[in-house]
Image 1 (cartoon, helix red, strand yellow):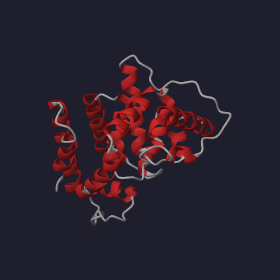
Image 2 (tube, one colour):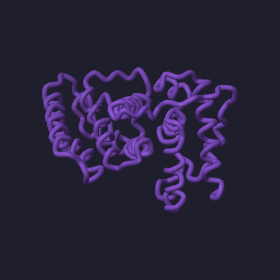
Image 3 (cartoon, helix red, strand yellow):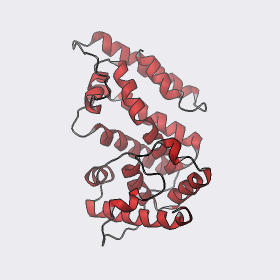
Length: 238
């Protein structure tokens, strides 16, 4: 499967994609093929299930389209939910989601594994969402936090549908799913962001702090308040 097929896979995440996005993806795929053709490096396939994300990204930078497919398969669900639960509107989420993956395509040749790939990927997503809210004139990622207490991880894992469960299980009850989506959207932006970065991205406190520019104690506080508010909103389903 070549780079154009990989780019088209991004475009197919939802049927409501713009022609401009498709053209951009195809142009990026052509550039990826050119990089693969002219690179001096002999890249061996790096698409095994046990291959680290960072190695896959480096392989993709060298022209291995299959490495991109593996990365996309690993992160597509969590990343899409991260974006969707920030904006709620599927059409907007589709566009932002495609933008994030196209940023991955654009900067592939300059990628350096200085951090975990997931941290880098969710940094791109976080920044894209911030840009979206700024452009729309709504500062959704602004909140007032209280840093006095820690946020126990158990409080987050106790919510209905822990992140280790299959998506089908988490979505088994449409009523619960709708309540969760509404409760998440009602959170102050920075609390929601911290929660989703941990819940969907599987990121550590230090990684969330690096992405958001907040201290680890502030991140703990945001997670504590978010989990408490979500538990209160979902108490009927406990």
